[in-house]
Image (tube, rainbow over all chains, first blue to last red; front, side, top):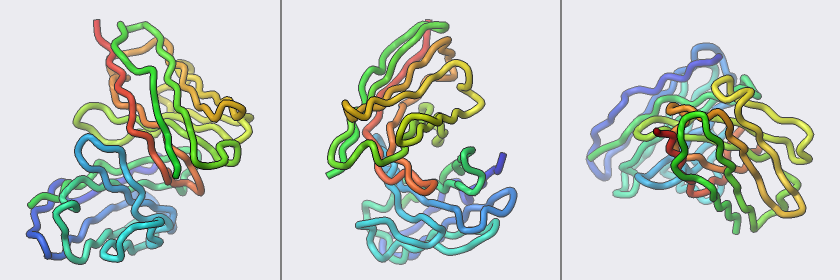
Length: 107
Length: 117
């Protein structure tokens, strides 16, 4: 099983600043990586797939990069609604999909 | 617009059974793989199962294999999860999600399953 490790567990940032979230895979997943955003009490929302492609309707301030084992989600200028939890997911090992443990972005 | 609405959650005793349903609308249901993903209270996301568009192939996480069965009725635009031999560790919010190219592009709001004596 491919293990996905996200860091940090909690990221403290001020509104308007840039946030950089990391996701590491225990073995190469090429570009088969997605990012999700989850607000409290809400379902996850797909942000990024293919490591760097924004999903439909996702604002340009969200960007993804990386390949192989190291990935980054960058939020260029944090808005109030961005202070929630983010998860990465690998799908290289289909049909066995695995998620990271999540990063909480807090003010 | 795409809508996924889960139902069927509730409180069940260990060893009991429960059947979850997901009603889909706003897209051609029969064209898509579908999946269940769960989230234990205060925890991260865990993929549970998915089913091919025609229902011919299914896959399960090791944690539920042999106990859970995923199915679909394309005529009713519905997805199901039959959960047997439930354990305390199955307590979670269960999300129905559309699955494409390895990613979950639309999610329902979830239904809570609590396994407790």
